[in-house]
Amino acid sequence: MISAILVLCCLFVGAVLYQRSKKRENGRSIPGPNQFMTLQNLATHRFKGFHKWVEQLGQTYGDIVSFSILDKTFVFLNNERLIKKALVDDGVKDFLWERPPSIFRDRLIPNDILFSCNKDEQQAMRKIFHKSLSVYGDGVSKFESVVCKELEVLCQRIENQKGADFCMFDFIKDSLSNLISVLMSGERFDDDTDDVKLFWHWDVLADKLLHPINVTILAFMPFLQHMPGPLGNTSREFEKTQNKIYDIFYYKMKRTHVPGHTRGIVDVLLDIQEEQRAQGITWFTEQHVLSIIINIIGAGLITSSDTLGTFFLNLVYQPEVQQKILKEVIREIGPRRHPEVKDRKNLPYTHATILENLRCLSVLPLSLPHKASQEIVLDGFIIPKDSFVLPNLWVLHHNADVYEDPYTFNAERFLDDEGNLVPPEDIKRHTLMPFGIGRRQCPGESFARTRLFLYISKLVQQFEFLPPNDSILPKWDPRFYQHNLSITPPSYMCRAKQRN
Image (cartoon, rainbow, N blue to C red; front, side, top):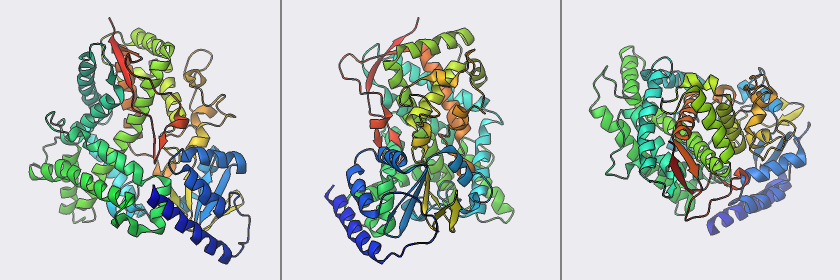
């Protein structure tokens, strides 16, 4: 806390000197708070809801907002039209493709899909990522079977609680960790070790380092990552945890790898690397393989875990929603058969609840920042070269002009008068972009959506989720959840009653 205050004080003094020397720029400047107001608010919101402050900026200044800290400019895009114009439409997207400098891009996870600034390499990496998933078939049938086996384990674990209080969030985390372990290596974690918690420790540390304010501090003073103090300690612990993941899911598997014998995604990546070497292609190095492994873990955990944790907390608060899902699942699937992805089209209410939960939570409220590779004019506003440009998904998904009463969970908003899912061209559907948009859109989106549907439909089919007997249930309201990179619901206890 003290070190953070000292850093902000240094930034404040720097802002004074910079503001005095800064000449007025020509052109139409983007509205926003001055540097002094910005630093004051950063200090206030450092340990509170940063996304809520950014929401207030949008309400005050409009659809495009900017603030500066010294020579760094941050631009927030607050509506669908501007976000798509910047990241999808021709003319601008080519200059907002890059990521800004960060501890992840430059040191911790170089050459990966999320942070890489080499366009050709990043596009090739996306293709390799999707090719590695081919181990689970052209569609999702093999992926379904892996998920269903893990869900059987989770259901048995919940059943073993015999109606007693348990931590649903921990159960979800452990299940997703084992699912990712099976996808990558063909094996679950050893029950006799704490390795099942390894991914989550990595996730918590990554989330802290990617907090927008920490990213800002390290952009100005990267040496802090190597020094004693909160950022340095977190950076070193993150690296230590990541190296252990590499030991288990790369080096150990590489030692026992047999070409053509596929246990999981890592074997596919090793085979691809060998194929490319045989063809004289040398760019796909060991570091690229390690980075894809980390990308799979990050993409597989952050969205799914926080979304599922929030979803089941809401079900405890809204038993009528639970009953509507159950009624639909029993009608279309029955009480015992495993749900399959092909069932989704026949479960419009269940699908609508997932969309509404993704909207309400907006798990990555500011997505990941883009960097302007040159000066850009967007809607008549000048975005300076090297600006950090962030699509403000939180404001987008809580726009009262699109979503009436936006802070209330209402799955019916995604249904028409006949109870069918509204079409993709409906404004409520095409405004919703929880996995990002454009060239940097999450490469694992289809698998994430599949995972959410299978977990939710199966667990509601088998259990009724109830309030705990011996603890207080936290409030369901994402506005007040912890925000680092992602919005994380609080841990909570609940009960589960097996259905007849």
